[in-house]
Length: 439
Image (cartoon, rainbow, N blue to C red; front, side, top):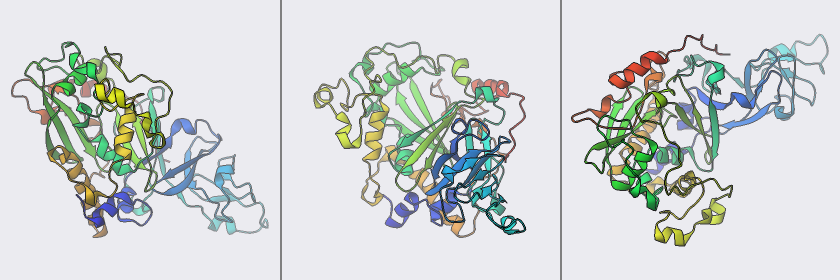
């Protein structure tokens, strides 16, 4: 469990808070490139780290991110006119560029120099992999962009999405790092009877179907962790029906990333109550198709009960839990629809007051993730620079394949350049496309 002080640190992310100060030292996903697709397109509202902002793309194609309120009278810039390389407030016509500088003030006398002295709060942006990233921290501390494998990705291969999550960022992060819950929360009766598709073989990067079979067979995995320069790598190790050892890998890269299997993912606080999950492809996403078995097979397995049905299951309607289905274990939870409905239920209803919790050995990853964040935030208050800021480090080499181990194989080498299988793919993954410049 956490002390009240530490619980407050991990949950409060606004300007001037201990954790908020730490998070602002890293480039943060703000919105999708597709949300501001064209020059002079409609602006969009953005709320991250408890700040209300507006994003737009100017006439030159640059992405801008500025305070939602015009510094004159506070009118919302979301309703502004996006024109001629700036966003113009419609109240009195004051216009600001992507750097926040006022570049036109037509309602003031022609000889006034007031506009040259006025800026709206605005943040540097960097567009990469279909995401507009922003730096919300002190300008004199801004580092280069950390490349997770998107800088050399041509625009036609940008694949990114985001999802609103009705829970705090810490609830979402904790759930994303939990390796045990699939054996329970997502389990369905037919999983244990799925046929072996060849994945239960030493040295094989398993398919999605095999993973469900392994989850059903061994419902109490062993959790192991190794700390690394970016945070940590961890494994949930399960016995398989044929007597092998299967590892499901996790990685945590400070401060937002709860996984980098073949693409990227970041969990970003909207504020102290809600969050966004961003996911994006990288130059390493093609690993799925190059590894034996790994990544093949969708979700159309025999007995698969989690089809899309378009029905909303929420906290307000008790996720439409079916107690009879729960009782006969057709679906262990009794919650239908996409299986991430179950994730939302479990995470949204979990503790936000962590002084009440009682953690076990299965929670080692969660404990370490919190400790790294809390210690980094407290150290920053003491003047110690945050970890994992150096943009020259190989963030694009943080892989995490799931595999049935060979006899004597060291799981800590999997998904790294030291892994012979992955080393071949890393070597082939580079695409000679110039990186997109920061704005």
